[in-house]
Image 1 (cartoon, rainbow, N blue to C red):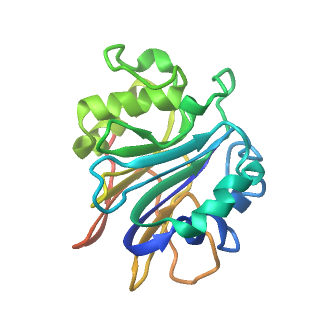
Image 2 (cartoon, rainbow, N blue to C red):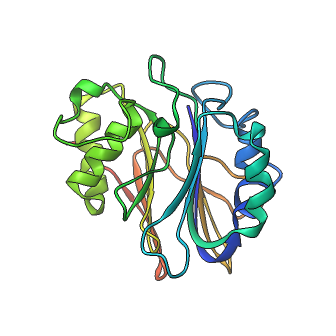
Image 3 (cartoon, one colour):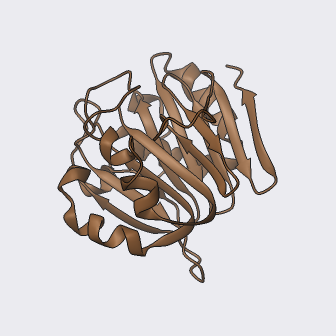
Length: 231
């Protein structure tokens, strides 16, 4: 359920990242190639990005399918960013369909997308979430606990709910963090920057598949992939 993507590098338009590749997030909203749970991602879409001169990330989210949003398609080519997180949503059964339930979520500093599901009863009740959906509650927990300890957070939650799927994707504008825990993830390193995504958006042979239960950490200094050890 859900597909997401992040970019960190030279300025790039949102259209170039989300709409234009042959197997873009737009295509993945109705025809994902590697999605293991669900067939389409029609329960909403969202893009968060960092703009020069603005401290807070900007977001554009909607609870309708991405292919129905002509206004975003018309504006996306005009917006460039050095860092973005975008997602299309397939809602967990029983979760609300509303704009506030669509990733990316934010605490004003970080953007976060959750590809997966979790039993909400295992999450601490102390964090204030944007929505009552499981993804928003996971995001609130991560923001409260500290995204810098993402690997430990995911291992802890996976121990609390063995059926959880916890592919998380985060960025603060200068760093991208991602986990694999029950679903697919790949990355592509280019001369212009790094793409991290649920699945490749084209057939470039440079895409690298990340093994399950691993943490990806991307900064201007490089990229690392480390195993996640369950507690």
